[in-house]
Length: 247
Image 1 (cartoon, one colour):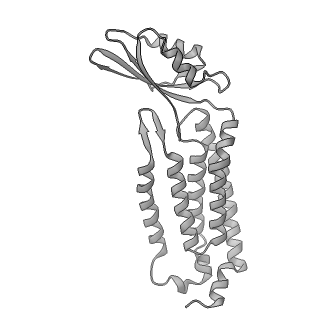
Image 2 (image 1 turned 45 degrees about the horizontal axis):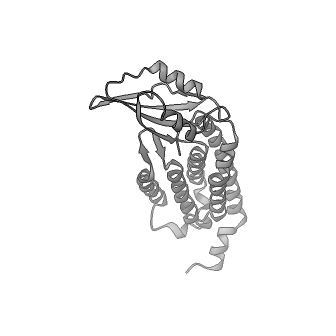
Image 3 (image 1 turned 180 degrees about the vertical axis):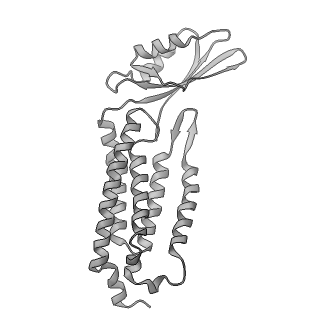
C-alpha cells in the first residue's frame, strides 16, 4: 500500500515544475496548431483550427512526457517495475486511432467528425497523463482542449474565411451542361469552383455533376438557402443537393 510520502511525491516541487514545463509545451503546440489550421479553415477545408490544434497539442503532450520519464509516478519508479509503460502508451495510441477513424464520416465531398476524432485522441492523452501521475498537466490539457472546442469555433467564425459548399447537380435527360456556364453562375453568387473537385457521371441519360464551391469571402457569399432557391430555377437542373463542409 502506498505511503503518504509516496502519494505526496505526485505533488512535490520537482514534479510540479515538470508539469509546468509540459503545460507551456501544450500551450505553444496549441497556438502553432491553430495557426496551421487557420490556413486550412480559410480555404474551406474540412479539417480546421480545432482539429489541427487538438492533434498538435496532444502530440506534443505525448512527446514531452517521454523526455521526463524520471518524473512519472511521482518520481517513484517502484510503482512501475512490473511493466513497460511506454509499450502501454503505444498500445493506447494505436487502439484509439481505430476508434477515431470510426467517427469520421464522408458523404460525397462533405466530411464530418474530424474534430470529434481529434478530441477523442486528446482525451486518451489526458488519460495517459493521469496514468503516469502528471495530474496538473492532465488538467491543463483537459482545460485547453475544452477551450479549443468551445471558443475556437467562435474565433473561427469571426476570422475571415472562405466557406466551402459541396454541390451535387442533376440535369434533365439529354441536357449538356457547360463548365464555363457553371463557373460563371457560381462567380456571380460569390463562389468559385475549386480546382480538381469536379466529378461527372451519367445515369440513364441524365448527367450529374459534383463539385465544391468555395466562397470568395464570407461577406459576399450568397446564403445556402438562397442558393438553393436560385438553383431550382436554373434551366436543365432537375435536382440538387447542397451541404456545408464540416469538421
